[in-house]
Image (cartoon, rainbow, N blue to C red; front, side, top):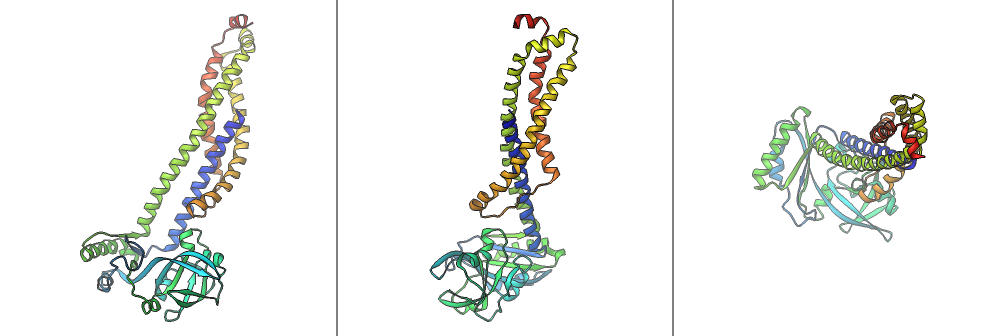
Length: 363
């Protein structure tokens, strides 16, 4: 009984701490992105020759929208890198020097510097640096051209963000025929929502179809919180299910215990013990079980919350640091205690219905 309740508490504490950690991770990344940025992403294959990109005329129209400070067109595509017989998939991001610097709060440098726009230089993500063993001053081939590594990004903690390779757009334009599939729009903060609506209208008119997504920091936050809410609900439901199973075990154990203690209860009733005395005896026993189970559950929950993110990172490629605080621990103990007490009501009620005469029948 103690073990089953402890497992239920452990699941609850672990799931709440992991979901809170995931929420903190995503919202902190969004904060780093900045509230003045609007991201426009083309919903087309990311292979350079397979889609109609954003045209220069369209970009110039967006630049004229009130509140727009700058528009940075980009090319974002998957690319397989190789170095010293090692291979690593990456997200190749061709952009201007100014565009890269506008993202400096999100993509922070671990070492080195950002590239200079008219040189064959690259800035690589943390995972590329670790997997391929590249370092500052090394050269890597991109589009059959040698590029010098001048910067290494600090770890973001999201797989897709840690395999980026930033390449100067001006240089790539001279090597291959490019099509823009990504825009970063810098807007006056007061005009962000207005600009997003105007950009949507311009793109719908120009492209004759809505094959793009537009995100502001606020809309991204809403999307993320909606997804996180669903994940949290699933995790919470699984945790409650384990607590309910523990509650069923509690009922069976207590009913068996009451049958075995029929003589003891009958004697107590015979010497004048009131109903509330019987209730207090069994309720105190339940609370003692809950206390011991909660202590074990918290310890197990902390261990579980440290182990599970390792597997979550492997599956979803997002690094999560679980959050532990008094509120989370109290939530875990409170919910499990409430469920266990509710499940204990019926056995306690059965105990209070035992009459002294039943002792003779039991004997």
